[in-house]
Length: 136
Image: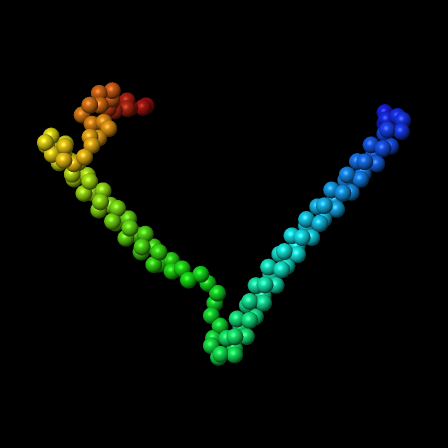
């Protein structure tokens, strides 16, 4: 006595069961296709590896490791050297900016003005630091 009456309730249950069955079959098919694709990829890699091994034995050369050929130490040196070049450029810009602030006529030759000069900041005032009172 689930509250369903008449012939329509049987049809709804039958359609729901059919939908669940079709969904299960579709998911199983997708899983099977995925499994076949993974198996195919593994077989291709195994075939390439075995052909490489057979060629190395045929020619008498040793089988080297498969790697990407990236030298981490070389990449570190490259990045470290690039950082030095960037820092050298920023030092030169800083010295030219200091010279431009010191001499107003040189400011026009170095480029656009900075967005805000430090001398114009008036909303922050330093206050004296008082020592904490002794506790006890």
